[in-house]
Image 1 (cartoon, helix red, strand yellow):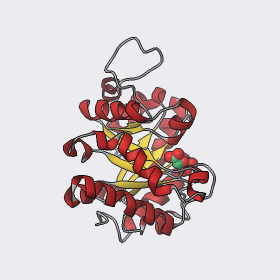
Image 2: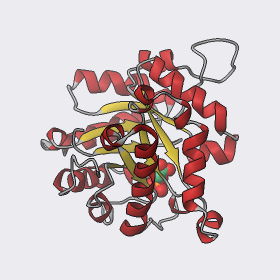
Image 3: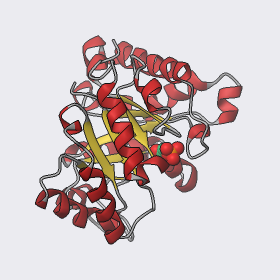
Length: 264
Ligand code: PGA
């Protein structure tokens, strides 16, 4: 696998103008980083087409993704956006099952399986987010919860399909709280996830799949998280809204001794 993936989830932030300004600031400071790390931003839907055009016109080495998709290619689904529409807007990645979608919009189970399939079918790389909340962690149920998140969606796919999915371990208690998982906690969860992938699909597929860490990643803690053997990149929310911080995280990823490691 190529170097680490550094994904910036902008969530519901940014007009088109603000988004283009942020992209311009990011690109101004990249300084060759894109040769050592894969860069990805996930702006809100309304900024995608403008962001794509800007990235194309400027030859910027940053991939574009969306934060959600509907499972159908088109139809009577008011307010929804499909895989083909995201491709048309220039996306190559899409988040599936972010904890804010799970908690706020009831996303789970077969719906997420359908979204994974839809993304793959339409040429988008899905980033499937999984992770426990604080009550589950404190009750010692983290591994079981991760297993059930994998079982209900990812493990419904064939090995060939599954191999094209990126995973993001995002403990809910770490998202937007300023309290990141410790490097040891992240590594433990990543190792558990990879062991599950391996027992299901074998070591070759498991070793080739990216597992990102997400949850209060910032310029100060990125290096130690990215140094973990099983961590293949980060999914960054709040800190990705500031160009300086996003670039600092990308630099930490590029410099990480684990860059490109499969964790196996
Ligand atoms: P955060 O968000 O970095 O603001 O904690 C991460 C995410 O939700 O993907």
